Image (cartoon, rainbow, N blue to C red):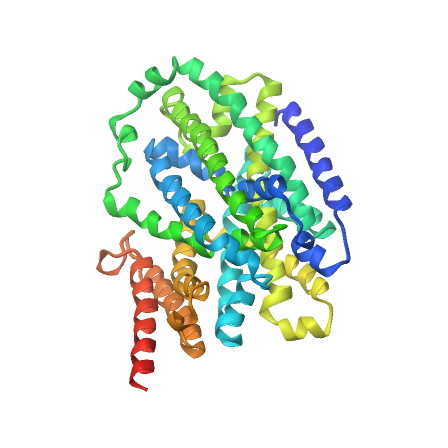
Length: 452
């Protein structure tokens, strides 16, 4: 428990609460989407910081598998984000929808919207990010495991209650600055300690310099399919719906890709430096915190710790609010319309916070949560949502769309539950048979339509 880090965290916590309090509003559209007035700079800050929450998982993966971190968690997501920017961003903003379930309702009717809302809610519950936040609290403040997860979640809920989406945007702006500052501080010092880029590279094990980290083709290739989650990612759509114009939405995503490339460069090389400077680290999850303690003086280490906390808290806050607004706006829209949607959203914060803690403690692995939830939701929503943005004649008919979302999710879930000894049935990752189920139902829909 470093008193300098504790002091820095106290100042940071106060700043978050102040920003959230200043963002409070009772106007419904302002609460849900910041009045649909986001300009490019806040759009980029909130999207970049939201889409990079599992920083300890990235450190662990870089430490264990080397440069393949970029191949697995970088390149596929850049490509998917580029497709989203060029094809979906302007279409999303030009629509009247306020959420993905709204989009599904407009294209396929209420049944598909409700099933889609369940998928969005599953994806938005930030179990991975409250788990990582709990890890950080345990590392820096000495709070034991489960209590650290609970404490971190309660603090995020505290400032999430103060304001709606505008609070998300304003706090994300601060967190965006801190996450980059933290890694800009540590990487040059770590590289100097390791002897520079060339010396660090040559000191790595051979597997850490290979594209797959020694894991094999399928273990890497599956992430290129899971990265298609970007095309159905509700935080992307939420920010596009909130943008001032379709042009801001497209430009904001394109600029964000550049910032993700930069952050992946900083964080991956920091993980590689940790592997070289601390080759016998017992727990690779600690690679970033231990690297900071090893190479940085106290004030710089406190800034680096703030960067780690900011990266995780930005994502946890964004997803908690997204999950809560899904409950308030999409899960039971008729009930919310008769009462107070904002009140239902605030109740949703409590429910999703509790669910996030329960899942985090039950599953216990950030990367595994990303893998399993990404496989289920991506396979369920991808084809129906992509087709919803295209010509009507290529879409599912309403009943078939709801069936395809449910069937793909069920197949992926069954495949995950059937995992034994780290292997899936037939040696196939769950996303592949689930995609097949969605595609087969689309083909059956086309066939019955042609026959009729």
